[in-house]
Structure formats: C-alpha cells, structure tokens
Amino acid sequence: MKHILPIVLALFGTAAQADCYADYKAKQDDPLRLQYGVAQINGACEIEAAANELAPRLEGAGWILLNIVSVFDENGLEERRDSAGENFLRF
Image 1 (cartoon, rainbow, N blue to C red):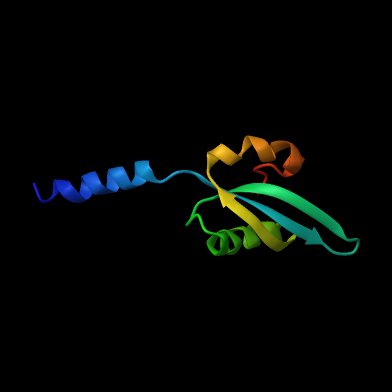
Image 2: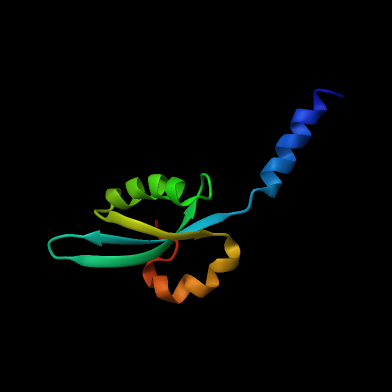
C-alpha cells in the first residue's frame, strides 16, 4: 500500500498542473524591430521562471527578451491571439 501512494500522488500532481503561458515583449536591433508574442511555458508558472525559460528560445532566433508581461492559463489564450499574430505560440 505504501508503494502505491507515491504513484497516486504523482498522477494527481500531473493532472492538477494546468498549462501555463506567458505574453512577452522582445526586440531585435539594427534595424530596431519590436515583437509581442505568446509562448507556452513548461516550468513554473511565474514571471521570473517564464523569463528564464523563454529568453534562450528567443535568443536562438535573434530576439532579445525585454519583459514578460504576464503569465496565465489556457483561459487567457484566445483574448491574446490577435494581438500576438504570427508570434502566437511561435516560441
């Protein structure tokens, strides 16, 4: 019985964890280009954790993260889709 408890806790912990997303602002220099986008976050659903996870993704494509605007669950996705345009879930 005591071997089953960790498995049950792990399953419920995974099921209880909601998807996390962040909206962000980024830039490129020379010439200056600004970007607003929405990205899925795999780690902790906190602004600092989202910044640490998203910055390398953006840098790989030549962008510099300026800031994370907010973190949210799937309920906030649709209201940001039009604003993010081609950068909706791109990174």
